[in-house]
Length: 66
Image 1 (cartoon, rainbow, N blue to C red):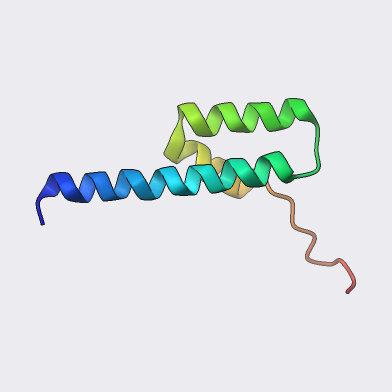
Image 2 (image 1 turned 180 degrees about the vertical axis):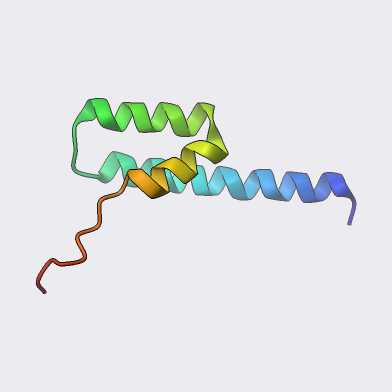
């Protein structure tokens, strides 16, 4: 496999993950301003934006009773 094919595959995977993250952001509960900021960050700074969103964005309540 040529190196160009690897970069194309990695870019396609990154795009799919970005679209998934944007979908999660849109469906999430939160202020519209915060959602817009996260979407802009993910679109314009893809890799760093995804990492930041994964660390700081989604709020999971691990102590929520079932």
